[in-house]
Amino acid sequence: MAPPNGIAYQRGQYVSVSEVSIPLLDPAFTKSDSVFDVVSVRDSRFFRLDDHIARFLESAKYVRMAPPCSEDQMKHIAAECVRRAGFTDACVYFLCLRGQFPPGAAIADPRTCDQEFIAYSIPWYTTVPAECAQTGAHLFIAQTRRAPSTAINQRCKNFNRMDLTSAQFEALDAGAHQPVLLSIDGFLTEGPGFNCWIVRDGKLFTPRDDILEGITRRTVFDLCRMVELDAEAAQLQPEDLLSADEAFLSSTAGGVFPVTQVNGQPVGNGIPGPITCRLRDVYWDKRAEGWHATSVADLIATPESAQR
Ligand code: PLP
Image (cartoon, rainbow, N blue to C red; front, side, top):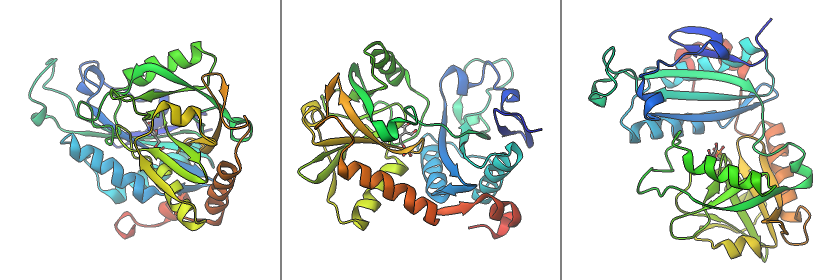
């Protein structure tokens, strides 16, 4: 029987997720010197797999890494991780690690390292409790600021997350589900694992700077075009969120989640808003129709060289 916590691919082998090992002196551990991406699988189909792989490769390029496998291999490995785990719904991670310094060295020239690629599937999860999709999530505007992209390029999906984790503690202490962080300049950015949106007078806005450009954020822009809603990336103040008609989160880990409280105050009239609910439902309807879907079984059946 497959281990319930998922299957990983490391060094040419498929193993249980709990068997993956990263050496103590690997800069991936000692310096968070790694990039990653996460793609979701529902009903045995990946969503926007090509887009996630493209972002993963962009992140790797930015930090001067080259994952040691082709895109076709990545797709095949991702599908194998899901199949071998026996999941129909999953989150699949791609990791590129800087790779070890010479044996025993704690620091060395990072240009000499050979990168390592790891992938793993874990059971599907959501960034806020799943029931929040109906009832709404509660956010807290944290004191901890998001590290600016001039220091850590937030468009590159990275594990430098001390700001997000500190903010998460603040939110939990305040009784909220998740924090949203402001930039150094005081503009709204994002939270751990999600982008934020507000609706004002029927128009949608999402933060523009110091964020990861989420694939779900891109999806929301696409859906807005389909249902003829105006949406724009902009510099938003905390007051824009506090006084919004509606607010929501977008994330690979769960899609679109209404936000019904910020700092203990109701957003709008305190229940999930009509535009948010429409986008949440269209998101899942489009996925059910197979929009941007890649079947796990098709990837397994297709020779790696014929994929894409
Ligand atoms: N922002 C951060 C910091 C994230 O970690 C994530 C996803 O994990 C997102 C935004 C949302 O991105 P996506 O829609 O690609 O999941």
